[in-house]
Image 1: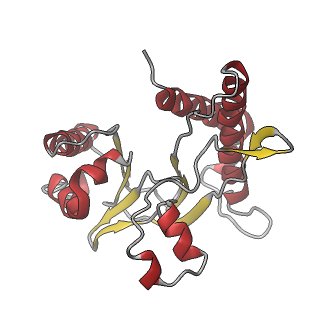
Image 2: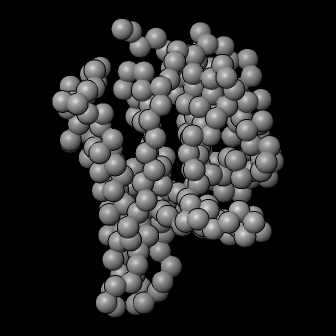
Image 3: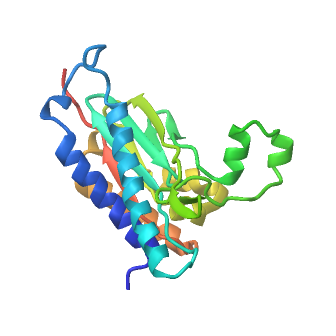
Length: 239
């Protein structure tokens, strides 16, 4: 049987891919973006918001069918779009995206936990540091009660754009990967990627071996949540 979380993730994935294929134009690839042709952040944000509404719609149906039951699945999303030498990341929830480069490893997303939301809202670090509430503060499919009915909540979509260079790797993970390693997550990712040199990052076999090694080690550490990893190697994108 497919769990409710997996089904929510499936709905979000299908909606995202469907909307991307219906609404994108071929001219978006290889374009030199400027004031007349802006970078497609608004477009990507709208895709994620549509995915949120699709999952929320299923959640409202589930609640209606379960005679008042309050448990319904949400899901996180970490979407990566590459346009030439620019990478656009859209994130909701706590599925992290990392950039591996010759400078080391950087986590480019921020977890949407209640703890982090408190910091963003201006609570002093001294108050938040002892608050271990890592429950999600934002996720696709979240519902709120309005006038006695459940409606889709406002979802916070984080968008980040940065340059990538030949030899870089963009790594997308489910939260089960870093959770398995705890504070050693970044060190474990770099160790799994050890031996990958710039000229090999576009080799599908080498990238597959890297993510399989990472997932296997997370499993060996006793990871209990979904452990999924996708790696994208950046090659020469031309002029």
